[in-house]
Image (cartoon, rainbow, N blue to C red; front, top):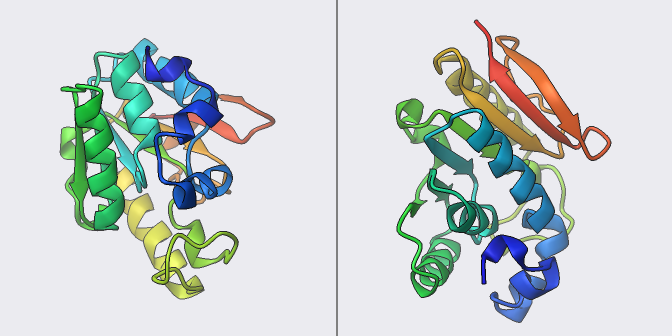
Length: 192
């Protein structure tokens, strides 16, 4: 069965109970993942990076329902290991999970980016992922500025999909080309 056809409840059942409880706050809903990957496919993207991939829900759905090369980067090694295990169990060969800091990653290998407000945990204490989660608004602002600079350095026609958040990480060189879900899901393209 294609992972993108799962309900959120069925998909989240792939995770340990503690992680299932965090789904509403931290993991991309199945329907949102399907819309995002459809945008990337229709835009001709070949390689998409999920920034702050967590348990990899977006990546797993995207890789299972498209031929695009999907990558996820996550700073928590335990989440990366669990996502990799699920990817192996579903034999997803067009998918990789990277353990690391997204700010230090080279973006040149990607023509599309998915961003579900990965830095929110620095300013919102609701449903912390672990004991590493702590409020740090200065770190939040630093990450947003660094990500904006990285997006600004990407070539023209780069695509970004954002879900939730204020989209303050999107530089003025991008144009909003589409939105849905009352403006929570936004589709961007670099223009200049």
